[in-house]
Length: 621
Image (cartoon, rainbow, N blue to C red):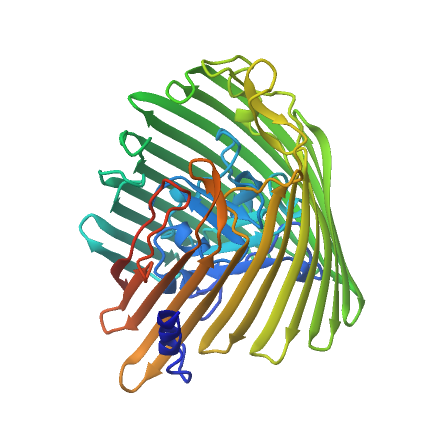
């Protein structure tokens, strides 16, 4: 605790400073540093009811993050478990929901790989160098984004970065990152942007007690193009590709194997602005190609997803705003499980047609009612609906929000067709008749702003998930995924105190939560309590010149895990510390992760990174 206090005092030592670098925003001229994207299925008055956390490029660079895990580890209400160190399989739990209850999006379009066993997203494969912004939505978001957002959603934004730069960092030749960004505004009005990166990480054995070193290599390419065709019409396109190859260990004695995960995305959109509306049309395609070495046997997973989405947002007509749209999504996949299940190859496809509508009503100067609805017609589960109702009331400096929302998750391709209905050597069978999981959540949000700089916020929530689609060893003649009526329940309180001005931001958070099956069985890897501190400071004084400090600390409370039976495991405390110094050459960064060198496993049996110090340099041109 003394060490924590020491670092807090260190960062507060200079409260009177200028920003490290001021930014301007003008999409047509360039030079933006912050991207704010609008939430799907919202309109002018309803936008304020969305529970949304934005992490922009400047914040990402200040943190010294290498991958997405480095960022999400310090967000309240989010818990992570990683099967080893950087690059290894990583599951994310939002507000105690399951790891496949978080929808992951790229520029607002879903990218969860439906060929994974339960449709979950592996966050260990995502590195951060070409991502411009991360948006985090906590709580059911089905009415905004569609199926699979029972716990919430994570949106990766790949907008144009107008700061041309080259960055290099690491602590030795086998642990380093290189990335670059270049944008050119053409005479014909096109804005062309290229981002590329390479990251190499050599870490200890993923397994606790293992002897070998494991390697992870990540490559990313992101190409963006946009042009204002007319004063009210813009076209934009994105090509995003990433490849991550990571060694992994089957056990501490069997340390052979690798996972090779490749993803390719193409997006094209039109955005038309009129005096009273905004109209968005997006065409999206993504492809996954995953390969696993299982002791000399190879598993292959391939999947494709095509999305067409159209949305219209109507600007306020007196005290009313509204919007509506449609989304069509087609998923196909094929699987060969020669190593892990010894099952026959399988393939299948599903499609889903969604239609949605929202409206916001300013009932009075201090009261807003927001209504959202969405219907999804799925190939196997049929027509299902989700909704969200929010009432926001202001009492001077006091803000009160009441929300009831629902969401659902349809079965993934693997759950539907994973073995074509046939048993393998483990008697594993798919379930083409699986029903969707459905959730209902009530939330109370209270915020009091003492002044423009200091605020206090509390969120109270209770969620129920019905017909949970879980693995059942007694299913039919073998074992498989079935709605075994083991419903889930989550309760929680999230508290935040935030102080900020143009020089600094200081926040303290605490989360108390419970995630159980309705029979009282605890969900694994979800701590009952977390708390932490986040601090950012920009300094410019006569002695040191301009520099910035970033500090993050999070306490993970005790949680249940296998050890080897289900047991409550010890808590952990992790923290990061970064200093950015503006020099004549560029911005120099020193970043220390796991500052106190905490020795811990999460989950049990998998070793996490000890203290690492990294040095980086960003040169703008």
